[in-house]
Amino acid sequence: MTFCYFADMDQLSANQETLRKNSTELLHVMTGWTGDMDDDELETMDRVALLELMAKCMMAKKGAVQGAVGGSVVIASGKTDRAREVELQLALKKMELDAEIEKEKVKASAESENNRRQMELEAEKEREKVENERRRMELDDAKSQRSMSGVWHR
Image (cartoon, rainbow, N blue to C red; front, top):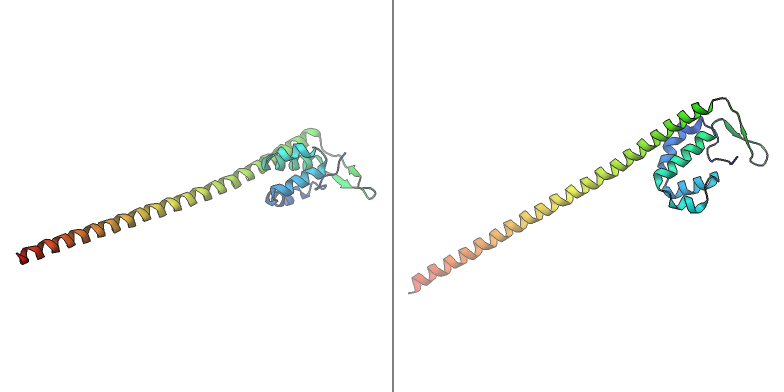
């Protein structure tokens, strides 16, 4: 059995938020510590897959306590495999939802930025329109003054 970064399952709830806040690079390192996958497989995984793998590792290690000698792992089995599977599914679902919420926040932020840029472009177009109208009026005014001054000089 391999050592997992989070050996105590009681820490899962407390560490879910911390785990979710970790950078993708750190998640790669942490999943590498589990020894469940080789480095090539880890490099191809996206953030959600890394979070799922860490959740599986944490759930698999529920009740595990690191031994005093050589980092061995002692399992205190007390729950059925089905109960662990249900807990794992719930933890994975929560992590997926957290990842989805984070993705939606990023999307909303990007949409907000796009809206801001669109408004700036529209404001710039309006300023150009007003400036063009001002110039047209100045030209019309200048033409009018020339034509009036031409009438008086005849």
